[in-house]
Structures are given as structure tokens and as C-alpha cells.
Amino acid sequence: MDLPASRGRCRRRGARSHLPVVVAVLVLLLPTLLLFSSAYSTMLRALLPFTSSASGDGGVPQCGGSVELEGERFLWYAPHSGFSNQVGELRNAAVAAALLNRTLVVPPVLDHHAVVLGSCPKFRVTDPASLRAAVWDHAMQLLREGRYVSMGDIVDLSPVKSMVRMIDFRVFVSLWCGVDMRKTCFSGLCCAVSGGSSMPADYNRCRALLSGLGGSENGCVYPVQDDCRTTVWTYQQNNEGALDQFQPDEELKRRKKISYVRRRRDIYKVLGPGSQAEDATLLAFGTLFSGLYKRSQSYFDIHESPKDQRIQSLLEKIEFLPFAPEIMAAGREFAKNKIKEPFVCAQLRLLDGQFKNHWKATFSALKEKLKAVEFEMKRNKNSGPVHMFIMTDLPPANWTKTYLANVAKDEQYKLYTLKESDELVVQTAQSLMAAEHGVRSGFLPKTIENRKKDCDHVQLPEILLYLEESVCSCASLGFVGTAGSTIAGSIETMRKNNVCKW
Image (cartoon, rainbow, N blue to C red; front, side, top):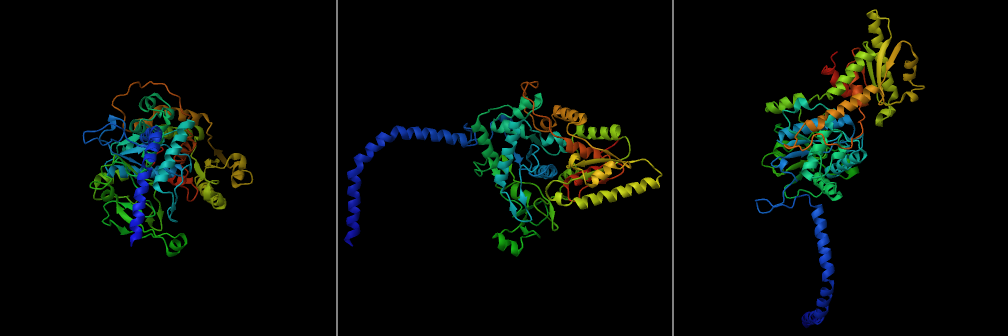
């Protein structure tokens, strides 16, 4: 029993005997430690996404760098995949922003599949924080390459402007993070409201802030981590916390070693008044895309609200968002002045993803549609050719040995197409960007120093797809689209809403 005590005494004697040496080493290292401490503090300040000014509540750092945004609360999300999916997410985001009384940050148009979610039905998706970071990274790529265009530039948001507060991503990032976004601008107003610092540390700080990679900091950002593997958002359905009818089957659970349970959550109860998220300046979602699978929505199931007339009215208005007026007018002009006759439109998606394996079915649908049109023309004693507008991702040089080549050679048909380099497309892109719909569709600073401020213009956006959809909305002899294509669904919606009047 004496051994432990003896060993303890030895340790104490050793510590006293080495004390002068330790003190000497610390004195020698003190300048280095101070230098490191200073550098470390500087690094921390660069990473922290808050201003250093103290507030009246005891010095708690404040979110955002501009008094213009004081008191505002925002909703940000991570769009992904193709344009039609991005429009669907924009609609859902607008509903969520209205429900939660937040200002919607309107994102840029992302390149096709530049950001990928994965598969909700297979429970294999990118986590929300990584998805938000990927959107930021791609937005910065668009900035560097001069290819930035806002969703608000392409989609007409005026039908819901009175019901949803909005702010363009460029204006928001410039005011909230204090970073320079002028390289995303085409005209003077955008340049005047998108200035700021161009220091790399400021961009990195903003990336961390918007992505929520650091979690919820001082109530500044509430990063929503619930995704389609665990959650289906609802509103006033009286089923908070109930199991969704679509769940991973036992084989998938065993094979993927997952234990996910999908529950239906009321978005207002979980993220609205009285919730942890309520006081956060920025509510950051991952994806807000949702699709129907096995009779269940994958993530966002708010399509009617009979108990809330304000939201019900918004849902009805946002079901269809047309393209910007310049795009719609150009489509009508092409139909009226170029085609000049009643025509049929064919949307043929042949090269992207799953569609490259379904050429036979796609061309078969086109053949059936043309037979029906020819029969109707004969019945009306119309002996002229069938006028047809074709929008396809298959270049004309590759039509050889396809059904399209046969149709192109047949004098019974007169075909029309558009190219990105066509004068109508270029002029439309110029007038579209000059209009600055994106910046004008939402919040602007009260004081704008110089609206005519010069800046380096971004490139003209590629708007061919949108203009083609506009032309197809005018096809009075009918429309045939590729089965399963969201582009075809978009055109059908435009035709249903009778957007082409000439």
C-alpha cells in the first residue's frame, strides 16, 4: 500500500525540479505563441460570418452587413437539375416563404445538371448543406465566366409579387455579405445595387453562411437538414408527425443499411412562430423539389389550403408562371411572321439521360400525331403541307437515318426550327437582359447612388429553350412531346393557360 504514495511523491519532486526549465522554454517561445495567436484570431475573424459591431443587447454579433436589411427574415434554398425542375422548386419556395412570412431569395438559373440531388425514391440524395454549398460554388462559377442570369430574368414573377416578398440573390449577397456581385450584371441598376468587397475571405465567409456548413451560428442561420429521406412538408393537414405512405422497403433497408422513416411534418408548426427557426435571419433549405412517386409526394406536399385563403390564392396563381414578356412576345412573333400558318409543334428529347434509350417510342408518338393532323386536314379539304415546328436536342447534322430525316425530305411537311445564333433569339436575349426583371422583381435599397453605373456586361444568356417553348404554346394544330420530359409538361401547362394570343 506504500507504493502508490511513494510514486506520487516522486512525481511531485520531479515537477518541482523541472520548473525552471519549463519557465525558460515558455519565455523563449512567448513571441512565437503571440504571433500564432494573432494569426489564429485573424483566421477566425475571417471565417466567422458576422459583423464585429456590438448591438444594444450585450454585444451579440449581428447578421448581415447592411442596415437596409435590418429586421428582415429570408428564405434560401438549393435549386438543382434542369430548368423545369428549378422552376418547380421556385414555386414551392415561394409558397414556403409566404407561409413562414419570409423574403424569398431568388436564385440564378443553374446550368443543366450542374448541381445534382440524387434519387429520393432510392433514398440516395446529397445532404442539404452540401447541396447549398454546391449551388454557391456554381453561382460563383457563373460569376467568373460572365454567364449569370437570374430566375427572375427568365420567369415572370409579377403575378405573385404582391403576395411574396422577394430579393434577387445578387442584391441579397451584396447587402448581407458585403461582397461584390457586379460581374453578374448586364445593366446599370444591377451594378448600382450589387457592389461590395472582392476579398476572397468575404466570399468564403458568405459561402459558409449560406450553406450552413457551420450549423446555426448565434441564431443567424437556421439550416434545414430534413430532406426527402425523412420528411414530407405539409400545411394544415392535421397529420403532424404521421408516417408517410411511402417508406423504404425491407430489402432496401437491408441492402443500403438505412433506417430512415419518412414522416409528414407541418412546415408552419416546425419552422414557423414558436419554433427554433423563427428568430433566425436566414432559413436555409436544401432542395425544395418534389415529385409524385407511388401516390406520395417526395418532399413538398402543399398543393391546396382551403383553411387559409391567402395561401390558397397564391397556390392558384403560382401553378403557372409564364416566361418573361420578351420571351413570350418573341415566340408569338416567330409563329405569326415566320410560320404564318396553323402548325403543329414536336418536342423531341433524344440525347439526355434516359431519353436516349427511347427513340422508338418518341418517334412513334410523332408519327401518330402527324397521321391525326393529316386526317383532320383532309377532312377539312386542306391540301397544303403540314407546317411543323421542331424543338430537339438532336442536331440536324445527326438526323441522318432517323425518322426526322424522312420527314425533312417529304414535301408533305414544311419544317421550322430555331438556333441560338438566329437574329430573333439574339435580339430577344439583349432586350431581356436590358430589362433587368430579376433585380427589379424584389427588394431594392432605398438609396441607389448611380443607376447609370458602368460595369462589365455578362454574356447574353442562352434562351433558345425558353423561346422554343413559347413558340410551341402557339401551335394551333396541336403538340406532341417526349413522354416523361418536364419540358413537355411545361409546354402543356402553357397551352392549357392559353398564353399565346395572336
